[in-house]
Image (cartoon, rainbow, N blue to C red; front, side, top):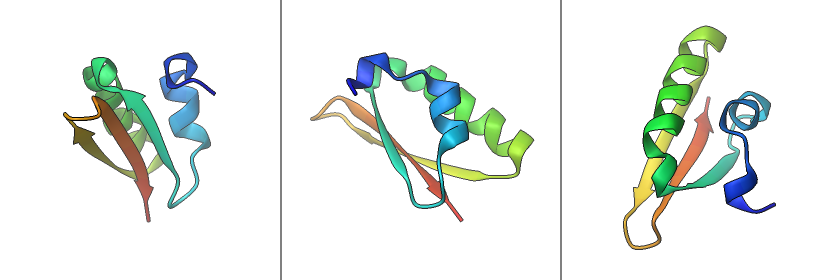
Length: 63
């Protein structure tokens, strides 16, 4: 699936521990906001890693 087609919230909800999803860097604010909100609501931990070279934001679901 093309990363531009991924819906942020449903993708984060469906993640299992250890899963990673890559988003375009242009969605940085939206992805981080959703990860923070869903982490609090669903009692989960998400971490994000930005690559300026690849212009991507990777979200990983932690334990």
